[in-house]
Each structure stands twice: as structure tokens, then as C-alpha cells.
Image: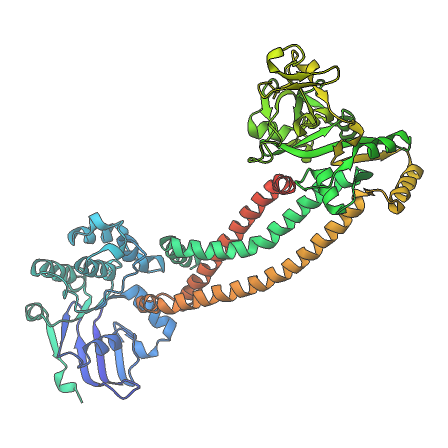
Length: 215
Length: 391
């Protein structure tokens, strides 16, 4: 696994809203990066550019040995499914599936997930008892933990997390960060996350403040 | 990639059981309606055809020929005008045909009481599965289906129904002993109760039995050489027993007694033509119909109605399909976030499309299965429903 590198990234929403410019962003394998900035500055947009959910108007993004711009849409989907773990701000769970089914959903579509590993991680985040329960019946904190385990279940090389601990108490926050470090950074992967939590930010290897980028 | 698409589609449908069930039921019903109609029409046709074809002619008082056929062949409750017994007797005496009288005015336990003669059983090929045919006044024979549904057996008794509840001078229930249960023959006979014609007249109050007022002075108001006038304490019998059977007697001329209809079995084709001609031009109050002709008129009307209904069902099916398409489109639009999530996770677009398509397929298959189950049920029950509708 060989990190992430973005150069001369330029992005503007079609409606002429947010404009984003990132001259250079590098993250070595096994490192973590925190994106900082006030609301609306473009943190989530940058995260989506880096994982290929949005297409930059200029510049390049390299994930490991792969140039993202050179991939077709199906290839980008394939890469997200197999090599990336995404933790969304709204958790993006399917309410009609159980906790276990949500966690192993990427595996059903071809992601190399390990059920035993998923169960072990669920146990660490106190989700084992809830494995069969429909996600519609979970609290916000439980939903967030399910989203985290789903993102890690297939041991991805890149994890992109948007406020992954916003709904968690301090004890659980530390547990989640410990798990993210173990399952991503210590295995040579890259962790990019957005957070407003200064305590969380202090535990990361790099930080990028997007405030000056705002047009 | 089909299995995960199946998984997603099935889990969505299974979780939203109520919505899926409602949609399935609505579509299934619309699909089943033409099939059910087809089975009902076919059952009606099969039920009526053999009996209509097997009954050469039917005699009745002038009035609706269709009503006469429905009552005379299928014992359907129709208020038929009375046919005088003498018309049937004169036809019998002409030697042109065998005549089997029918009295269909009364009911017991919701079933028709058919007052007739023993010839009826020979004509319809009816044989008792238990017991014997009626041999005495007050005895009855029960159709197989009626006996089964009411739990009736030989030796039990049934009461004729009081036709007018508030008419004190009206028909009083007669207690009838079951002498036999008929073997089933898949016709209206299975749902009927048969008595001797004279028993039917007892039910009608034209014949009756009571205490011997000539012997019991306490019941007499006056007595002459010809007449005895009794007071209200005289007991009339509501059951024919070996002890009181001899006391039952008829008032008036039995030739004037009413019949509902009479089955006419002409000796040959020539006799049939003669009889048809005789009644067609006659000024009598009777009519002689060919049930097969009435049946063809009825069934052709039924087929026309079926064709019209099928056209309507096709329009309903089209409308229901359009509504179902709209429901799916709106559902997919409401679930845009869910599909977006799957896209973000990297699920291939083709798998997503398949998942949506499979939801439609699952609902469609369940609707088809539901409609087939419903139609099969109707196909199985259609014959008994038709017999019930005709009774």
C-alpha cells in the first residue's frame, strides 16, 4: 500500500457555488490525515473528490498506484467497493437490512470481506448483540458504529470518514479511533477524516486546514 | 451478480410486507378476475347443459319460460304460477308421453322440497346410497350434498319451513322422517329434499290429519248425518306416523290441486312434435318448453356478458398496470438516497438496475401466483357455487 497524492486539484460546483483548490496533498501509507475548516468550506467535497465520488475539473489524484482520473466510472465503483472504506456523515445504512447484513453488504457485491473479522470488530464496538436487529431500530450512536464496521470489514487500503465520531461519547470515540488506527494505519493503509473534534485531530499524523482555500 | 440483486430486492419486499402485500393483492385480483369468470361460466355451462339436454320437455303454467326451466330443472326459488294437476293427468292419459309431476313451492333447512313421484328417481338415475326411497306419506329422501352439509342421516327428521311467519292460517311445518340419502350425481338433486307429491300437498295444507272428532264428543260443536263441526281443541297432526296415517285425508278434487311443473318424456320424436304443437297453439293456461332451447338462449347471453366483462377486465388490467408502474416509479424516487448509498459504496449500476427490476418481478410473480391460487380455488368451488346460486 503506497499512500495518496493529489496535485493541483480544482473543483467548482456546476451552479457556481463552492470553489476548491488544493495545490498539493500527500499522505504516506500508514498515515492519517484530518481535514479541518468551518462548515461549508469544502471538507466533504474534498473527501468525495479523493474517493472518486466527485470528479475534479483539474489536477490529479493518485491512490496507491492508481490514477483516479484515468479510471472509468465502473472502475472507480469497483475500486471503492474493494479498496476503500467510506463512513458517511449520515451513516448511509439500509434500514430494511439487519446490522450484520449492512456490515457485509459490500461483500455481497464482491468486496473481500471477512465475516469473522467483521464479527470481531462488531464485538469491539458492542454491536454483537445487535447483529440480527434491523438498522431502523438502532440509535444514532449504534448506526454510526455499524457504518464504521461496514467501512472496515473488507480491510480497505483507504478509509474516508466524514465526522466518524460525531454521535459517539468520549469513551466510544477513543475506541473507534483505536480501531481505525489498528485496521488502517497499522496495516499500511491511509486514513482521511473530517472532524471538528480537536482531541481527535491531535491523534492524527497530518492536518489540512481548508479555510484559506475558500474563494 | 444476480444473487446480491435478488437478496436486496427480496429483503426490501419482505421488510415492506404490508405495502408489497397490498400491491400483490390488487394486481393478483385484477389478474384473477377474468380467470374466475371463465371458470364460473364454464361451471354454469357444465352444470346446466347436461340437465337441460337430458330433459326433453317441461310443462308449466304460462309465464316466463326461463323461470320455469330454472325452477323445474335446478329447483331455483322462483314463484311459478300454479299448473293444475288435471293438465298433467290429461297429458299422461293421451299416451303420448310419460309425465313426472313436480311441486317446488316449499323448503326445508334452506333446500328445496321436491314433491314428485318415484318415476323421477328412475328418470334421473338416482339411487339411494343409504336407506330406501320414500314409500309412505311423511317420508323424505335427502340429496347427498344436503345430507353432508346438514349432517342428516336415515331415521332423522326434518321440518318443512314455515313459508309465511306471520300468517296464522298459512302453511304449518310438517315433520318428515328421512327414509334414504341419495348417492351424489353432481346436479341440483344433490342439494334437494324429495317427498311424495301427496306429502307436498300435506305441507300445503290441502291434505291433513287430525283427531277423530266423530268419536270424541268433547271436540264436537255440532253433528249431522253428513257433517261434524269440531271446536278449536281438535288436534291436527304435524307428523305422519303409522298410528295416524290412516286419518290423513284430502279435501276437494285432487285434479284441481296445483303443481309447479311437470317433466314430460315424449314416447318418440313424433309425440314430442305433436305435444309441442298442441301447447304452442292452445288457449290453455299451460306452456310446454324445450329446456335445451332455453338453456342455449341463457348461455349465449352469458357468453355475451362474459365477452363484455373480459373487455372491461382488460381495461382494468391496463389501468392497474399503469398504477403499479407509477407506484414503483414513486417508490424508487423516494428511495433515491438508498440507491445513492449503494452507488457510493461501489455497487455496480447494472446490479442496482437488476435489483429494481427484480422487485418488480417478485411483486409480479407473487401477483400471478396469487391469481392462480385464487383461480384454482374458484375452479374447484365453482360447481358447488353455481349449484348454490341456482338453488
